[in-house]
Image (cartoon, rainbow, N blue to C red):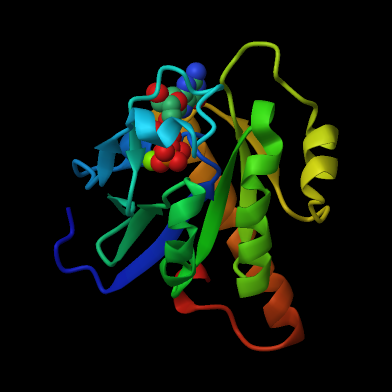
Length: 198
Ligand SMILES: Nc1nc2c(ncn2[C@@H]2O[C@H](COP(=O)(O)OP(=O)(O)OP(=O)(O)O)[C@@H](O)[C@H]2O)c(=O)[nH]1
Ligand SMILES: [Mg+2]
């Protein structure tokens, strides 16, 4: 692990309650991730919609933090956002200095991830959307997800399984490619992209 990396690149994973953000950070981090999870209580049942996440016993109350070494000079820092609405005020801080974001979607509850997209668009942060596979009958076509979230055609939309390291890596690679394409498009119009993406 490069302890003396020059560049820390920050990526955040956002989305609604229980869509698999903590799971994804755990799957890809090379260090044991910092998780700020707390046990869910009966009192929370009236506030959080737990109907589709029956097996869930813990929820993120601040953020998840993981790390991936890219090479000797570049390190990727992964932040998983808290999903419950009462912690959303933390998001805007979490987005500062962020290179890009993954919006995780549970297709049984597509609308839950809409707020994340709205905030990212406000911040001008590049993002991709990844549908986390929870199986069952709740699967929607990509066209339906695009329409429900009112996604711009250039925003990549892919399927993933947040429990799988390979699948989660593919999500991050898709995001980095999208960021690179965004900067390439911008630089054609204005300035040069950041050094690490050339
Ligand atoms: N079937 C299936 N279950 C998953 C997948 N990803 C996560 N889970 C399960 O879904 C539940 C919620 O996952 P979390 O990673 O805690 O979700 P989160 O988005 O961090 O939740 P909050 O922080 O509370 O918003 C856990 O019980 C996971 O084991 C997946 O890809 N498929
Ligand atoms: Mg979490």
